[in-house]
Length: 182
View 1: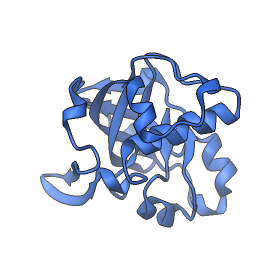
View 2 (view 1 turned 180 degrees about the vertical axis):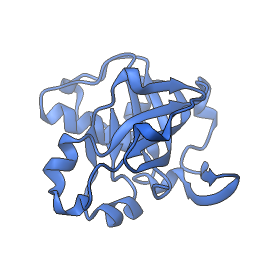
View 3 (view 1 turned 90 degrees about the vertical axis):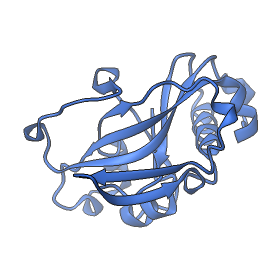
């Protein structure tokens, strides 16, 4: 899964006032590094995110979840770069339902090494930096993602539970961009 619009800066950019959920194909997730031909994309971008892999099912019947409560289901956290592709001339003109159907521009992700002792890290305080050709293009903090990346994961679990669906052991979730898409 990928969660879109978890940061106010991304909500303002997209003209959306709440987070949204999208899918992500496992075949488009790469470990640690990737070389992707620019010709594969219309207008490629990168988002700096915290990813989480689940250690156990998050049952719909257990909702509502909180950030603290959902933590017991997280096996590992990873730094992640979501690869997005804007395939529209004017994405604002297509409206939110079309963006949801498009999985909010998701074209894949590059996920860093799994950090299993993530509880020792202040996820709200981590800094994410996007660099293009070595130059800093954007910077954000984990707290820019709904106050804490675990709050975004809890939001997803609760949203899916409202649809009668559950997160599953092994699911990978991108919790939303800390930095404006670059």
